[in-house]
Amino acid sequence: MDRASVRAVGWARSIPMSSGPKAARDWAREHLETLEWSRGSSRTMDDVLLAISELVTNAHIHAHSTARLVMTWDGQCLHTTVHDDDAALPTPREPSRDRLGGRGMFLVEALADDWEARRCPYGKSVTACFCLPPAAEDTQGGPLSTAPPEHTE
Image (cartoon, rainbow, N blue to C red; front, side, top):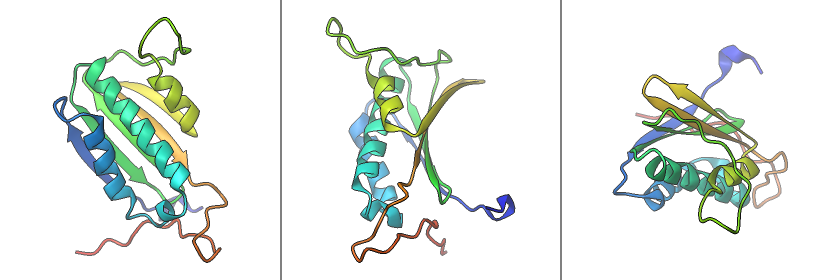
């Protein structure tokens, strides 16, 4: 792919602590449904929404912060980033029967094709990337377009 011709489409929204992860999932679903691949790849859509729910929950519970959610589709991968106000980086922990919680990053690691966390000047950003499955097919059996929707004004 010629890097000079890469196009992307994206969305951003703040999710205050008073809203919760359901608001993030509903908002994300609405925008992801504008991408053609979402109609033929419900498992990927479910994985993305669960990961977003976990990342927003982590921002609210562990960082005591508004979650700033950014989704970017570059034609091959969906990048979902949640920024919060705490610079402490998350680390996946093995699930335990002895404690509640602690499974969020374990789930993100299992669902996403890749993820990373980076400190920022005012907190951190955690990004989970989801690649479109190579066999995504539409209802007629043909491949779905991975191009972002055309922007019209």
